Amino acid sequence: MQISSRFSVAVHVLSLLASQDPAALLTSDRLAGSVNTNPVVIRRILGQLKKAGLVEVRAAAGGTFLRGEPASISLLDVYRAVEVVAEGKLFSVHASPNPRCAVGRNIQAALDATLVRAQTALERELARVTLAQVVTDLALPVVA
Amino acid sequence: MQISSRFSVAVHVLSLLASQDPAALLTSDRLAGSVNTNPVVIRRILGQLKKAGLVEVRAAAGGTFLRGEPASISLLDVYRAVEVVAEGKLFSVHASPNPRCAVGRNIQAALDATLVRAQTALERELARVTLAQVVTDLALPVVA
DNA sequence: GGCACTGTAACAATTGCGGTTACAATTAGT
DNA sequence: ACTAATTGTAACCGCAATTGTTACAGTGCC
Image (cartoon, rainbow over all chains, first blue to last red; front, side):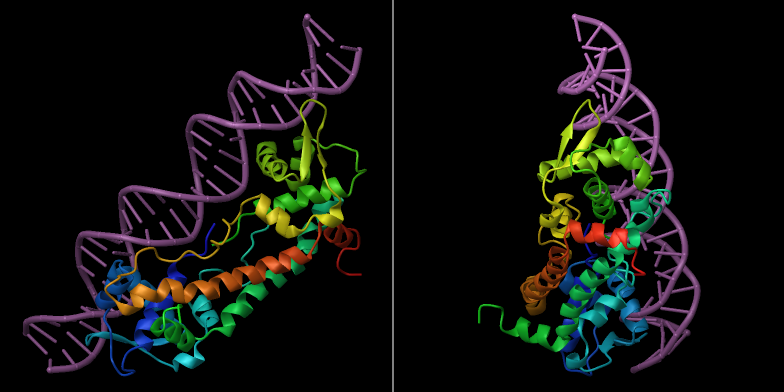
């Protein structure tokens, strides 16, 4: 199973907004053009980004702009905003092990600490990277 | 989206095997009883664990036993065995961004390093924990 | 008031998961 | 060699999430 591309699309969209004149607006149509998908898909994601306070949307006049500094938006913020993984629930654990069995009774608790540590480690790496850094990496494409 | 419970079930099953007399066998029926699921689900997972060399299975006479030391089986080994996430593909990235757009052209590369780092961090945490440790945590249920 | 947008609902197609039934293949025990 | 238990698999179901699509009501600039 994979983490939804909503996340990568959101980063893409925010990168577009961040690499523009900060006052400029972009419509869902233009954004969809760069991502290469349907505008409605973009609007759904923008709705989540808006709810998280990352962007602001103007109804009639050409769309969306970034609400904060690219340097103060982390990829973890984006990850959380698009709700691609419910908080603390990256791993699903079988729900009803047999309580009459010593292992069944305790497996969830025994596993939980490790799983939390693992997903926290992942999130920490996302938290380290800001939208500004992504934009920088876009300008000098990797080779440099 | 969540990582399949195949992983937690596999750890459960291996814990049962590890907390037994190392020579003893367990049938998919008994294992299913503790996990509280269908024996076929267990057999499917056992098939993967077998393919990965973690267990051995005897057809007629009561089933499965561990093939290695619990202390030398890490949760990462299990995670890989049950193929719950394709190698290096925890995050899905939208497949065809517009190459005529500077951002679209480079977003994948710009994102890749971060995503790889994030999933590697997660895997490193799984690698740290062995089956033996899980079994220990089972015996002294967290409170201790 | 008209027009360009957004927001959202509704639907389809695809995919993976967890569960179930069914049955052939294997093998220990007698 | 026969029996009985058990595995290995295929086939199918129902469910849920994802991505894409059409349709249309709401919003707000000009």
